[in-house]
Image: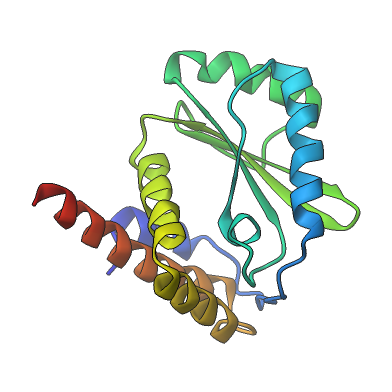
Length: 176
């Protein structure tokens, strides 16, 4: 099940077909290169590799790079990233800004994100769960591979349903 905010976000996505590719080990090198570049621009701050390339599984083959910051520093870092990368592809003020860069034909999605948001906290919960439970990681990998050729909207719908299921389950365990 999706939240109303997630439904709204999905409705704005394209209906182009998604191509799922096997894991490419080169993405780790690309992440490290961009991480160093970003830290030279904004200073030594936390830069996190997330998503399928960080997990070593099939996906869209892109590097998801997150810069989680306290929201009081969001504007400062945003200005520096805009000066370096140009205008963000999307921005949710004081929550998240998304930039895109390509290195050796590998797409890097760079997210400046407020570490106080549920988006960031849930992302960490989800990925930590997958790292801890190999069967869940395998189920996620299969789900992604089965999405090859679906529209972007349907791909993200299925992904978010899976992610929400895991996040909900981890929240219930936390309360026990």
